[in-house]
Length: 283
Image 1 (cartoon, rainbow, N blue to C red):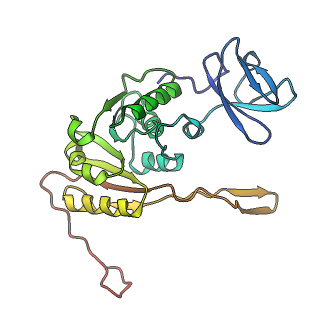
Image 2 (tube, rainbow, N blue to C red):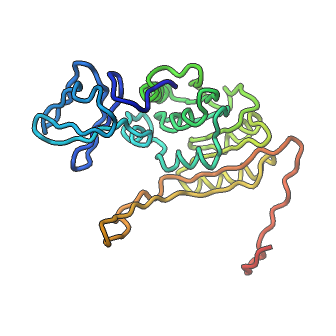
Image 3 (cartoon, rainbow, N blue to C red):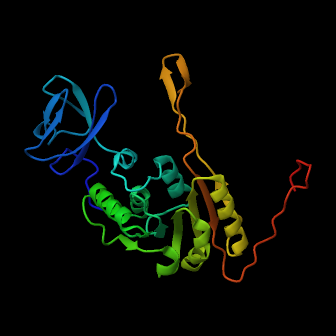
């Protein structure tokens, strides 16, 4: 967790260079390194020792703005073994599932490690994340991506377990269980056994069919509160003086999120109250 996030650039830092057309390049600074582009070369020594937010010019005269990359930029650009959870969904998982510093979190379906980075950042040095992944090739990609972002192994805070969650899980009294897989409804019972009362289960699914099965499985299990299902849409805005309008493109559907809380053992959830058919009155 000691990876540098502020201060002057140093050798070993990962730096994002942005050109006038907003094209971004990520480099790892080396004392004798050179970044080559068709717009000219930039010696890494031009960046080392400079503060974040500096502007450097290539040998061809093109100006580049230099910052350490944000986590959202890193996860979108990282090498992929499987599709990554978009930053808008990862942020909602961290926020809506209330992943707090010091939390013990289980993640199933590590993919390429994007969500893992968000979770490790959220739990902090006192927390712990266990990630289950069935496919060895995905696990290896995720390990490299996580260690590259944090600047080294995360052995004190992260355990990457190769195997199926249901058959391999050995944790208890965890605070959060995050499921990113094709059939999260198959893992609801395992999640319930691992979660402490008051803990949160949060599932990321791609289709309405998956969402329906997940909601019904959580609802039928009997140990959880009424599940909450939603999606997040993000739309940028163009602002130039009085010319203010929504952008023509937006980040629309990427996935659905389903969450619920673990109740105490032996507690029966209150019966759901439904609107009578054909009415709009709240009960």
